[in-house]
Figure 1: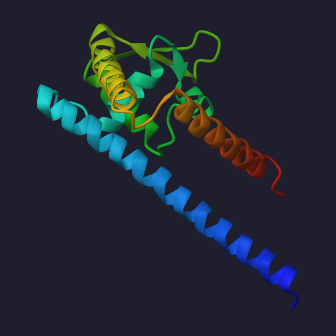
Figure 2 (figure 1 turned 90 degrees about the vertical axis):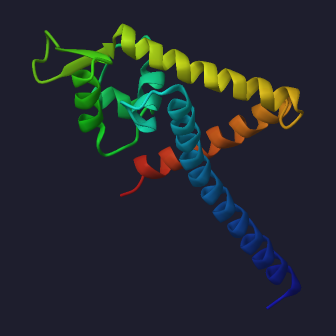
Length: 165
């Protein structure tokens, strides 16, 4: 083995360790985000829905979507999207109606109650953004760098799914 190939292996090993750390961070951040939403809702006395459902309402926003679109638009990755949509309709956070063109498809949109939850989450995220920026934890350049890197990983993963035999 040559010095060059040993250095290349070390570089690959270091990159692999960094990649695994990034994966763990993304996973932990998502769980932590759900915990932050849960804590905020407990503080406000909003106990009827969970943090996954609140994030789903936030991501739908003013759109009218089908369950399938929630996944393709990247709003929701959970396997129990149908359960959460049904629960949110039952609790009055969402309207649902069958699509006039494809009767198998159901379109959903937020009710006033759902928009109120969306606004709570939006306000929470606004406070977080302001806090990160004002405490110099993360500036505009830093957030742009994070988003750019995450978009590149997203594109790479999407390509892997599309081009696997």
